[in-house]
Image (cartoon, rainbow, N blue to C red; front, side):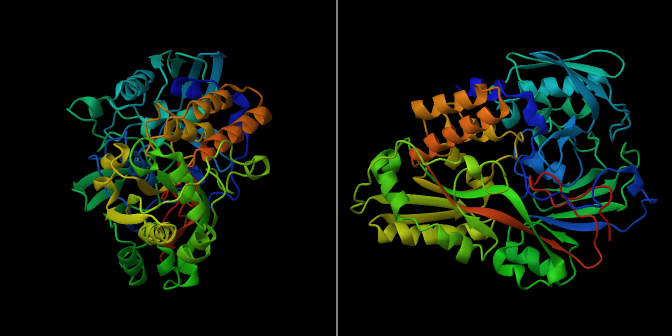
Length: 499
């Protein structure tokens, strides 16, 4: 069950290097970066517009963290370990209880970050419907425990709780954020930048928060634009309208000068998800036929123009321990003849490579005898239909370690019967058992082996067919420094980002 898959992981995971590479220097929270903080405003373009009025509990949580608005008790360092954020330290009292010691910090509305405020924020997150991905299946209780202490108790042992609390969806907001009908992060967060104006799904203005605990940001503010069209983002950077453009399409990379583009290995994998619950691909033999029809080498070489690696599994090469432990998929069905079976294939255009990848999938499936109809929309207009299983197939770019930093969580949320992001509609008893075993293994190396065994079981269902492991291209304008190149894609600007 999902709850088992989320709650019994090894404490030593917190110390395990998961990623290759490192964060770019100059964009962190070091007080040495303060330097007066009187720089120009940053002009930043993001690929995804806010879909939930900046609710901290859904996809918009990452927008808030990337713009330097929100923070949690912890963060993730370059090696995938839990690092101090609003909590300067923590200690495990027993299997279910942790104490977090808070640093001196102030909310953007001028109130102090207190144990009571933190406990209240986490309580609201724990009661949210639907639950934030980081807390799905987790029973969490938070209480003030002293002058600077917050005590957090979980229903079951959760030794990776500090890692979980780094999730953007568990950002700490002041009491005023929870007084309306919806949670409002505007002016109630703790990060170096404060939202001052939101223009629907088009743009937002942010000013520097001068009382930020990590020192004043060097940029005086941010003018953020939400531009779903990747070509438009690249053009705006090239013509000097932007300082930073996230997710530059690979087709546009060559149009930028070499010193204007940064490519970063990430934990993002683009996969073809097949609806195992209903429709054409409820038949395991037809899922096997789709898998046999794919030539994944084409995606890395042609669609992503070398900014990626051929899909090998759910975890890509940025998770350094995975490749050496990967085993062959288990339990695959024998492929059937497609015989004109119809397939509704969907994807979104916020990431421009995805429609092209979907067209290649269409060509390869039709060559194998399927009849394919493609639907392309902006992600915010597609997600509910995808989660409801209204498509036979879906091309998805997914950062496998985004929600919690825990590699088992992606398996539980995306590929188990109770998973809350199960676009593949997979409900396989053997896969569920394998995920639960991975989550319940206590030795670090043995747990990794179990996680890869679970991956092999899931891949064996052919409900997920990895196409490519991506590198993300960030456009950086002339003279801009300190952009944070985060393999987890949680942060983009910080106190040291400036022009």
